[in-house]
Amino acid sequence: MTLPDDPSAVAWRLEVEEHDADPEEFAALVAAMREQVPADAVRALVIGEWGEAYERPLPVGTLVEAAGEWTGLRAVFLADLTYEQCEISWLTHGDITGLLAAYPSLGVLWVRGAQGLRLEPIRHAGLRELRFESGGLPAVLVRAVGACELPALHRLDLWLGRRDYGGDAGVEDLAGVLSGAGLPALRYLALGNAEIADAVAAAVADAPVVPRLEALDLSRGTLTDEGAKALLAGQPLTHLTRLDLHHHFLSEEMAAAVVAALPGVQVDLADPQTAEEYDGKLYRYTAVGE
Image 1 (cartoon, helix red, strand yellow):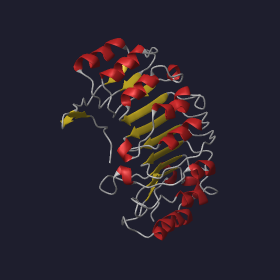
Image 2 (cartoon, helix red, strand yellow):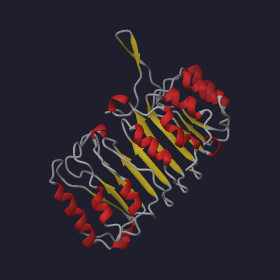
Image 3 (cartoon, rainbow, N blue to C red):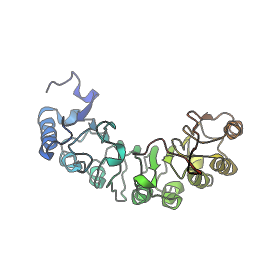
Image 4 (cartoon, rainbow, N blue to C red):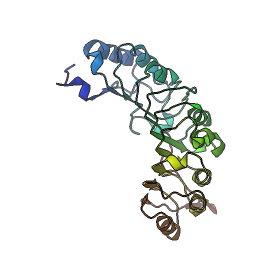
């Protein structure tokens, strides 16, 4: 392994070469890194293919074991795989609570995929950014996030997804997040990629967390005129600097009404979609599914 001039200035990527690699290969990669890279230089980790990602949970235990050495670790991206390697809805995880518990100074955690993903409610004083990218986020995980105490969290992204890919969360499961009780520093909230986008918009309209936000992201979902009307009928949103609604199903008239109602707010209405008709029924799809 050839080290860069400043090994602390890079994000270290750990990835096996073959998608069906033996579990020991990934463990060996972590062991080699612990041996060859100065521990205080490990600031950011990107975990790619770990071997049979479509059915074998990402081995976060190997990262937890290194916590005593990697005390400077501040950012982790779990399962940074492209769809050619593994579809997002097939990426398999286990319980990631131990990772947060082992790294109390971790500032950023991004997770791609949600099959088997679990998180227990936890207090973490250092986390500033938490992001779950999925084609379907389980309700139990959404509730767990809402039950966490994350006093420093500035940004939260939840890609809720579709029920046929495991996204069984309803607006009632968002109650903890929308209350903002455990998220006093939250300024950016994304509840996107949702097939229940209209219901989410209606819930956000009166959510206690909204007045403290600087940016609200309801993009990538199936938002229609009904959801947009509910959003505008709720509490004022003119304090926002940005409202992201890209990949939506709004009419041109409704899109114009949203912009007119929010002067001074940067409203992203890119990528308008059209519902598809099959057998007399209209179907609307999230940006990310399988």
